[in-house]
Length: 244
Image 1 (cartoon, rainbow, N blue to C red):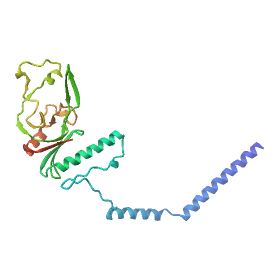
Image 2 (image 1 turned 90 degrees about the horizontal axis):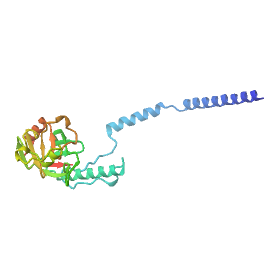
Image 3 (image 1 turned 90 degrees about the vertical axis):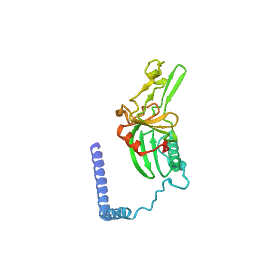
Image 4 (image 1 turned 180 degrees about the horizontal axis):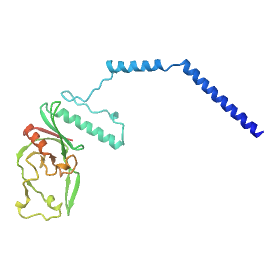
């Protein structure tokens, strides 16, 4: 009886499978996918030729009022990431609205990039190094090695700049602060040129070009030799600098 029951079950399974197979074959004969695929291909070609009707409206850069991004513009990432993206977009919109239609410098601290722009044209895109963000303390003294964000101008252009080392340059290396002022001067560290901005910050050269692209400086902007030469020729004193 048990064997007969198993045989009966197997026959029912085979019959069910046959019914499903016949049903699929009937559906395949009654419905063809080819017309659907042809219709889809025609729709894609038409969209490519005629467009989808969607229009991208960027934040206006020249003239008019700058427009802040809507609150729901950023949905990916954590709430902190979304807030950072929102503030970054807002800051960029204000900077680019404030930018004169002439030549100006833009510094991206996050990606360590420096741009020289004139209107919508990019005249120079260079790899740079910005502030490390490290906080250094010695006794009761404290320094933060951060590149400031904001709107500045090229205050001075200095050929063959000389670096007068501050106290932290010695303390950071575990050396005593010299009493002789002449021991503070470094004639090579800043490269061939320096462009001063803000309160004691500079765009200058570096002896360590292999570190470009990293946040390793004490607040200044480092550039490679050729890019520094191009920047020197491209801008004048008074040229706006936008750091974000």
